[in-house]
Length: 239
Image 1: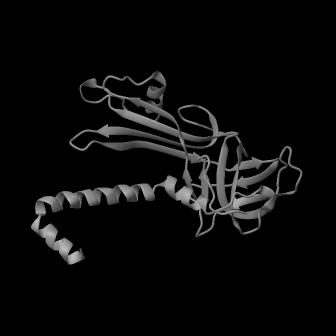
Image 2 (image 1 turned 180 degrees about the horizontal axis):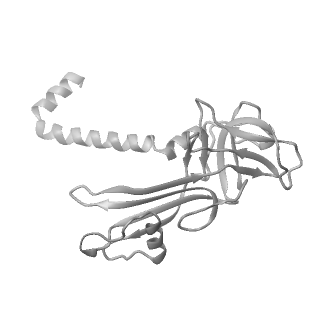
Image 3 (image 1 turned 90 degrees about the vertical axis):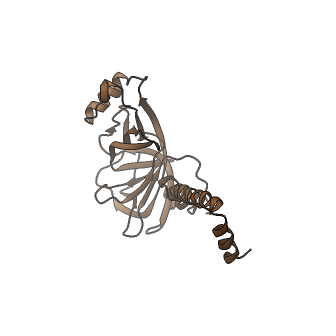
């Protein structure tokens, strides 16, 4: 059956054509949302790169390293869990009613600082920036908090809401349906980063590191840093 035959059939069967059209649109939108999500983009890029040892990095080569995240300076403190970290993303959303329920973002707080990756006593430094943003990331959600009509927010959740100037109740003093997610890269957590390898002179000594230069993973105008704590991302390439 060619296109003209399909068009003729659908024109003669509009009662079937309209549901099919909506189904096709829904599937297309859902697939696009999945395919272009940060998680899938990060996985696609990393799967094309072999995992390298820090000692085998080559200048100007786009490389992938997996190791422990360590802080360069005083660590960040995650807003809800209060854990020490080098990167956190917190989002608070409210469910909106109506025929088609959806979630509205009330607050999003994302902070990242420079950090080391350590593997087998070798170090590489990563310097993400938020303005301009030089990285693409996906962090696994560590904490989920919610409240609703019959689910009062905890004391800790209320404190968090106050920090971001969000009221936990609405009309008739009923609890709003709220949810909060927190994702972090904790100190010592195993992570994967990809960037363009450079070698820089070390201004201050690193405990346990006896060299005067250190590898750095950088971004460029055409290639952002890739940062994730997703586990077990398989590489399609071998060294």
